[in-house]
Each structure stands twice: as structure tokens, then as C-alpha cells.
Length: 124
Image (cartoon, rainbow, N blue to C red; front, side, top):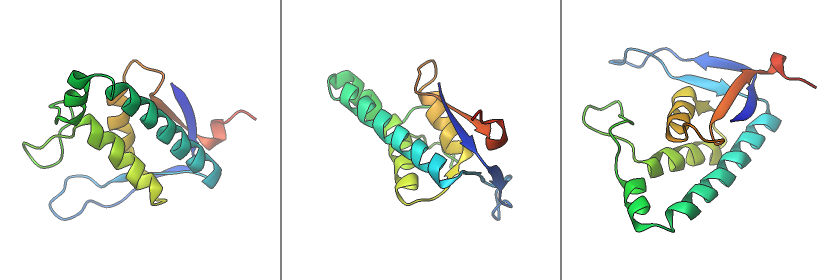
């Protein structure tokens, strides 16, 4: 599990028709870049592994019932989970907590999981 720090979590008010608001992870610029670069590196590793096996490649692009989208009956594929977080960070946007949650469920049991802790707990 990789450890990253955040300054605060910011939860927005729910949009009309939604039960809860999106929670964003606010990080220092240095920590944000460290997380972005780490995710990009891991994503390259994952894609490299997937490219070696046609069955794995098929699974990678197929929507998975464990990753339900907000709209009923729609699901994320592992590929979408990875490309969504990479796209969000390539634009310099704060990452929603839900994206990190999906990443961690996808990478469960591997060193690729992300552990987030408040910056005040950082050891210098």
C-alpha cells in the first residue's frame, strides 16, 4: 500500500436529485504530483500486464458488477477506473474520494492500493 497525504477533504452539497455530495481530496501541490506520477506509473504496469493475456484484456475492458455507476444498471470496467483517475489528474483537478475508493477496490490485496492520511500525521 502506498501512503499519500492530504490537507483536507472537501464535501460539496449534493446536486439536485442526489443523496450526497462529492468529497474531494485536497493535497499540497507536491503531494498531488507525487500521487499523479505514482498512479501513472502503476497504470502503465497494469496495462503492460493486461496486454500479455487476451483473456485478461477482455476482462479489463468489460464492465464489472462490483463497480456500479450512479445510474442503475451501469458499471465501470477496470479500464475506465484507471483512465478516469488519470484524466482527472491530468487536468490538475482534485481527485474525488470515490475515485480513490474504486482504485483501491480494483487493486485490493496488492501494493498498488492507496492509503491517504492527513498531512499533520506526516513524519518528517
